[in-house]
Length: 357
Image 1 (cartoon, rainbow, N blue to C red):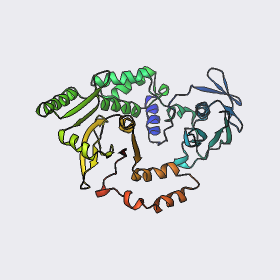
Image 2 (image 1 turned 180 degrees about the vertical axis):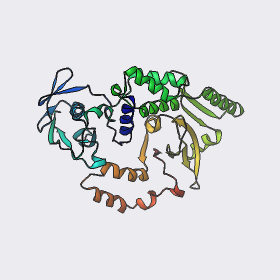
Image 3 (image 1 turned 90 degrees about the vertical axis):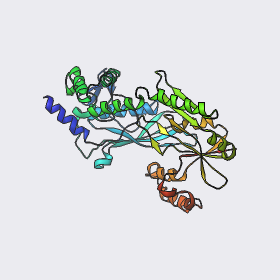
Image 4 (image 1 turned 135 degrees about the vertical axis):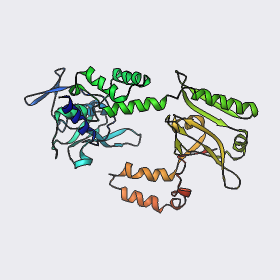
């Protein structure tokens, strides 16, 4: 019985499903006659055009519950926003669309009062559904706080992950009661490992920078620690870089695409352009905060995205747009495209330009 359950988990693990934005686990439901009834005895109606919901999250949660009973995974395919950035239209689909071309889906929109209404529904699948596998589809899987803590403690104690996961299975009473897979635990442990600096690493960095500062008073560094005294961010700039910023700091590129270390901290060089048109280093840092902090540090600048990255994202964001062809042609015909779109020497362009005004 254990081997059978393990085989089912491994087979599911081979299925590539699209991650949904919500990772809340749906409560188990029972099918009674023609009516779907949740475990708390609240009726769950079959989806139909005209059904209304208070907000988008309530709509998606309802669709997940319905899909959980029917035995298929779901995800959000796309959404549209109005001029104010508010989501007004959404398409929810069976996640098997990309793999087998399943057309099961629903579309819904929000009215002027903020109420969401289902516009179209397609409940027909071109593949078999499985109620027994619903809990292990990616949109329904989760690691409980208890399991996370157990995996973290076992990792710190040096217990191999497969043994730690097996103990979780035993504690749950078997594979049939699991709400996660071994790879979910592995991904979580890897995340913990990356966020936790090795013993002495932060101290070693601080010691090295202190020596640099002792030999040159103009050397500057700053370290940001979390509540557990683990290094979150670090920035440093020597005297030459600081002087260069005074002369050539009108345009600053902040590039986090260059390198990421084993702790999931992006290397972020700050680069300016000197009077010879050459790149000059203004400072460096390792950061977990990515580019979000830039808007805070440089509040009075004009921020610009690199055209190379914009073009890279266009197929993803406008893949199903009715006017995508004309949008692509307009960008390719722009004068700046030939100059900016191709990174020099095969390197990626900086993610963000901050122009000081």
